[in-house]
Figure 1 (cartoon, rainbow, N blue to C red):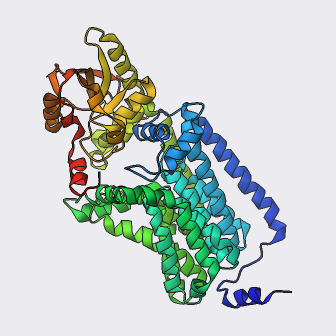
Figure 2: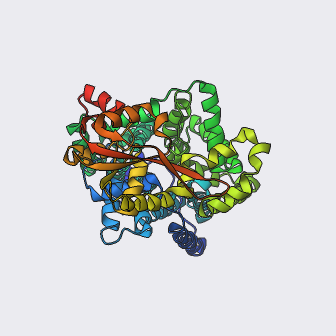
Length: 537
């Protein structure tokens, strides 16, 4: 017999929670688990095949400098690096936390879809969308703050859905939001989404009067306390940087960046699945307006994050991965569109094609370049050459070779006796530290990689010689050239070397820097100056 409290909760429950058909549960659940294990094993094989990128090496360094927070992002990715690379710095252990996080994210998305539909077939289809959506499939093997965020996001979706039926889950909901805040600043869309749901659904506001809900709020705050302590001490430096970095780059043509964002989003999702998501979104809006609580729930966790970054693409060059968590509820909605079974199948097939193609391009970059580069003349408008020579793809083609060559130069210059390496890029310095083990510092020209400003102490290196490495000639970087000339007694002649001769070559530049006389110019750059004016650094 139900207690009085349980009866009250039943009266205020806004959902009809369907029981899962027992006859199909066990079989399809086993298929889902097998699918996750298979994809997990396949991605393990790719982990060490792909060289470490500059961003990944940077996050690896976070694990060597534990803190309650970091200039660029909240601390979770650094904490995970500290734990997983405690005994080994191999690429497998650097990338394993992201792979585990993305796998757990898929499992909780499956659980959420199963409870949402009361149907394991639709939950299995949701999981397939997640596993094979191109951008998620690729990012799952890379060390980024996003993968732990994806786990926290799907966990929070599942826990919130449970909480609306059982008050005991509100603590888990709060914990999920708190952990998400420790992962990435976009996590703040989670409480915004929950607030939107309370606005859309009047019956759900019952929970605002319950102690169990506020216990969840308190749990979220306590779990996220390291984020708040670090940022309050530094007057919200991390949030200020993210706002500056994400929204501070005004495009010349807002409509061009908007359409570019939409096109890239559709390709990263895969075109057929993107169309299915649009149909599902329109259906959710219609059902929500008619008062359907389940649709209002999904819509509330889609609209804030997707809408914000879609609109922000008029104001800045929005990253295609920023709004990814908003696709999780869309996957659930798309799996429920049984009247579009053919489109669902085409969507999955398209996902597989794009995922396999991108995986091959990343795993075999030189072979891909040989195949793709001849098309750069025929298809000039789609930017093949720009892609192949872009920062991210070129990292796969040359950063490991660059670090090896830089180390050889460093060891060779015995007569100049360099004691440290210096770059104008946090990713170059991070890669040098990872692959060579030498002391690599960075002169920050922009705000990215701001942790180096805390780690590096140029004053201790006064009187020492250095080697300067960069991606472009020093003569093309007036700010860096001026700072180096003020800092060192002599800036040597420019040299260059090429890594990976072939269809796409990587050219790096280096200079000898003699006698660090005045470290101060190396400690200053525009973004740090801006932070100092606001007393943020």
